[in-house]
Image (cartoon, rainbow, N blue to C red):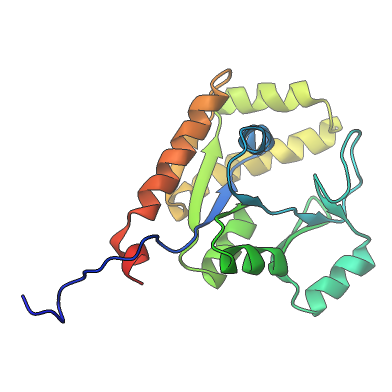
Length: 207
């Protein structure tokens, strides 16, 4: 093998990851993110911008950036969002700047978004790692959504219908993680394993 063909010396680190966590309502995505933050993972967790009303105990700038519809549409017009979608008549989007800045600093980024948003990010950034998080069964999703008591019966019915449709989009993702009740740390261990494996991909190390 000639010296031109030899890959040595190998780089000391692969490029930072953009990891997208998605899945149906009731899958436990917020609980997963909260636990990862509590464990002190060296990651940048993006904060989604939304026009929906703030729920009790939510903090602006930490849980979400709460914007008026007019403010959000100005961000759309200014190409300030990596992805955005209208869900249940409310806008949700991921500010582009915070993702670009973290990746430029070599920090892995975690984005939580819906199925539409995950597809948009894949189109904009093909190297993104898409992880589908879900409950063990549709019956478990129903149970979790009922326990939340944050939606009216009509809203709950809409979310359940959407969740059923979203389960059909699994093939568009790279990985699936089943978030079983009482096993949150196992869910996070699997996400950690996925990220570790992605870091070892040859194309990431050599590009």
